[in-house]
Image 1 (cartoon, rainbow, N blue to C red):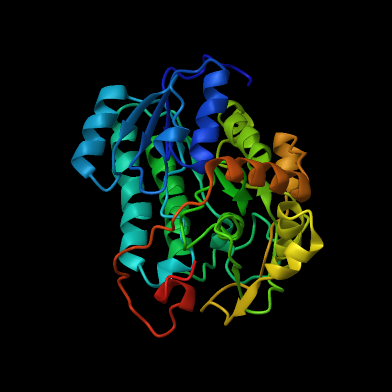
Image 2: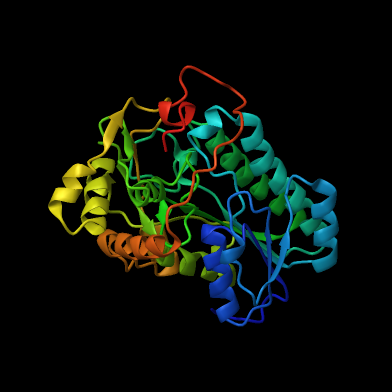
Length: 347
């Protein structure tokens, strides 16, 4: 990092979650005073760094968040807390919007009042929607789901409020991050975690459609360093940066690698071949991003191959063991278009 004393107090939201906890570890190791916030809806206390100052708090609690920010007065915020459920957001639009957009404003407004210097906003590749990949940062925002809308709204609100109230910001758009600590118990997202957790249960997993959807997957270590460093580089103020490898792969090919890493015996791989189900509604077929800007501005160089990263994630997952999926009691829109895996709790 360019300067470890540039900021007095650093706040990471989503600090008990997958990406947030890895980021806290990185910042603590650099000697920063780190505060962490999480409502534990998708995170775990086992992920919390004991050297950070951690608080359980839901960003939808406007008064609670305001009081918290008034107390700690962070000058740098990494915002990772999110209801990161693209496909599910078609069926839970209110929850998605309140957790993502309104929760963010509950955080940002008191932070500005208390002297916020810089916001590192974690956005999403979902803001690009169904455009021609590889996605580049100069493309218009055309989300295809309510989750993507909430992320795009957060980006736009950040730009506007930064211009008016004079704080710096950088927007990071990671894509399909995986690795140790990913929430395997979420049945609505995290395809790699869902695949591995199902195998730990001793059952086949499911693929929506033909499995020829093309994606690019980012190992957690290759995402956290550029995200952390973005706060300490003055030339990144106002920039939007994709973070992730450019090599894309089909979901079917991903499945083949997961099975090969999980089962040394080819007979076992055949036994656990995935079950195909109908496509999910409004799912973008091909979604992957260019990382040329990250290479230019952040000297970004992904180091972990998909095979190596999946091997490390599987080793971690075996230590944790199978985790029972946590379904919502009820979705806001109970539709016949809901995936069968959710309706019948098959995951």
